Length: 337
View 1: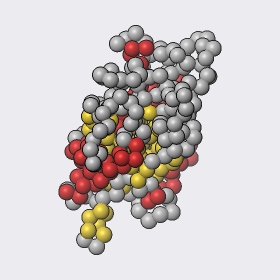
View 2: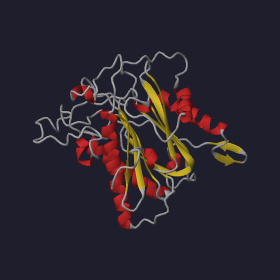
View 3: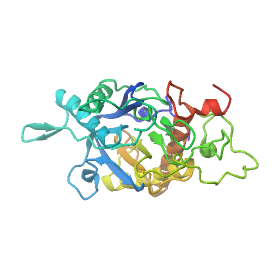
View 4: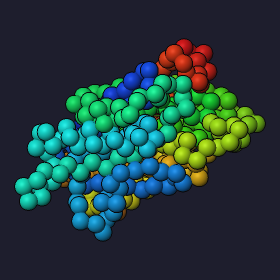
């Protein structure tokens, strides 16, 4: 298995990604657009999620495919971003045709980035609907990671978080990609070191090439939380998307989303806490017609885990400093700023 040509989720045929963010606000939106409606599912394992239209993704419910997925900052206010992306799609006649009425299907998830040093005094209405529209309009095969989009204001335990992405091309030609906004209560690095928990999955030196520390530091498994005085319910969250060009049913896409959560566990410590809203969407574009055996499905799930772990580390590694930051970047801690 190797990274795709871009090492982004858009190596999966049929997908584009757009970002919109505001440096003053220290927040933003990321939209994943499907060229044509794609099979999708979701798995929520965090204890404090914020979502829109995730019920339609259950395998037993009627809708078979979605037009886009939205990841947003802004806590519950950020759910407005899906309305902006939905409006962009409807303007172009894209969506489910219900008796002559076009209804784009756009599930969304949010993270909590309000107390991060940004100016959240936005007046009567939050800006996320317009950012959702702008992010959809910016969608392309190349996009920024790090302090961008839904990761623009993200934080982890002691370091800035961010938006990350990675891809894998399997030996059978199937591509798997991950996209993630990392705002975890826990840490992506081992103790206070610059070494990433995801180092075992690193492709080349995509997030520093440091490997794992040897020996592990004494505080490697110490729980380092973003909020030291009180872990704030809903104050965190890692939200992601795993995608493939394989042909999957909604039920098998659900299994893929579950597998991608293992990437969270490989890259963050601790994870899936009561104060995180950890969630993974899964998308299958079906552009690759390779038939998957049971063994292939196992390798597909392993690729989802690895791609997600790498995307998380890449998000933190790529973060850049900005005025008013409350935490340093990984580069500052590693002496590479």
